[in-house]
Amino acid sequence: MENQSAPGIPETIETGSVYYFEEERLSSGEPHYFIVLNRNPRTEDFLIFVCASSQVGKRKRIAHFLKFPDRTLVTVLPSEYPQFSKATIIDCNRVFEKTIQSLIKKETEGKLKSCKDLMPREIVGKLISGALASDQISESVRKILLDIT
Image (cartoon, rainbow, N blue to C red; front, side, top):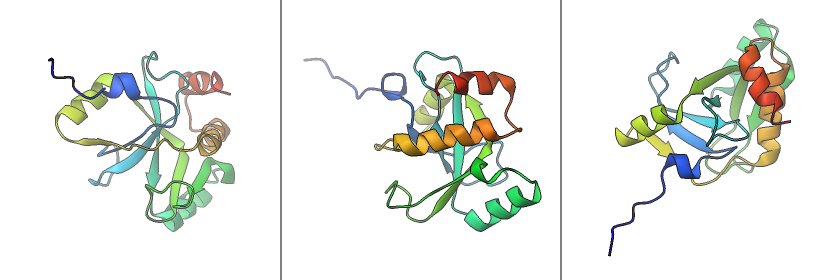
């Protein structure tokens, strides 16, 4: 009998998948939760992620100072996504592009955790709308996200 390994990221990734890892481009050296926004993440060249932060007040102050539209910030409560232990904010003014290969590498190195629960579709819709409402998002990312709506 062959030893069957559990399905990996390429077989399980979908819109709303949540991963927990350290992102080199963030000033914090701590891991964060990242949510996949792509409609077809298994077949697209780049994955589009937004990053969750538990520093709700700080993110809101920065966004207000930079005059970002309110809808570019999405607050998620633990009652909406139990993986979060407290109110969490997702700033849709900054997206992260990654390849599936980069996620596999992080997972192989023990630097990535896959969350078993998907982010609810309603919240993913708000995240996509938030990113599309931001003038900080590139046209190439905007085109990928527009395919979703």
